[in-house]
Length: 417
Image (cartoon, rainbow, N blue to C red; front, top):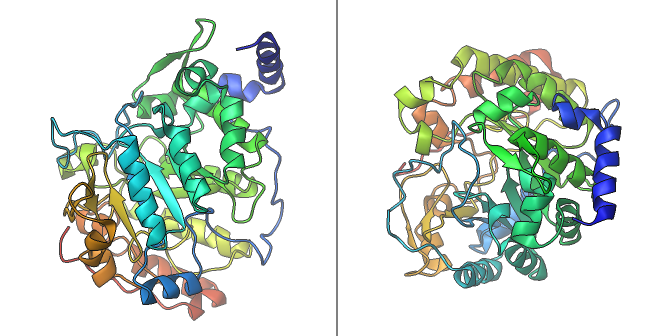
């Protein structure tokens, strides 16, 4: 880090004490003080599609997005991680090369994809070819979207190690590429958040050591300063998994981030990896009644603040699931699934083309063209209560006339889980 950057960071921390104590993110300017405007889009760019786009993709046998894993390295050990201890992983298998990843992305473009989601097994920003992949997606006129823990944006030592630039420069470069970013924010309380991710201790350029949340908060602030939340739909989101440890703060955090035009993705855990059994999941999960009340409360907030109501989603208060119907998920080994929560393998990109895999997928043959999908995997496993959709829909229709215009979603089921 240069001397100028050092001074800038010191001044930044003095002006932003909430980053140091990791309690709140209070210095980010509010964008929506009152009601949401009619033009407001409830979603994040690269993961929100119009009915016309969905219809066209279905008619032309196209996909709209593709989830791809990048690398295996991750500094965290999250209690709910769907990619650790995952039975789908095969020890000794060779991971996809960066060149193969780019080739698959090119195939997806030819099939109509409008966005590529870069996800973990590993933390994507801890991969040396992260920007190479993101730029390639952008150059193909698709939206690059990354799921990240966010700490590399806030730790210049790590940013320089992986990308030879500061975290601030990373944020600006991603913004210039037209990317969207989803940051892990399970809690705004440092002790709770650090516990959830396994209490890693990270070192900065000067030998100072801090917990994950310290760097995550700086990273989130830098993404805001780069302008990610100044778009409609926004290009900045925070992802929250509903847990015993963070449940009491979820609603307040949801409201706070909505006012900042940072899209909150609130959901139950994916039933894979560390939470693949009932015994493991019950250690961290809340009661079904609590989930139903949270959904009611959040959707009531949305409607009362004039956000357009489109039906109850498995993403609490968010957009209807767009994975089913026009997407697939490819893990770090090249194995292809309908969804990150699915355990039924369609094949491998080393052996078959994307179009061949898509043509035999459940997403194409059962969910294709459907605009109101609800997560069958979380329902089957029980992380989403089986009566949640019906109970929340009933509550909203009883209290809000605009909710009565929306039909309850069809609960389609895949052939394989």
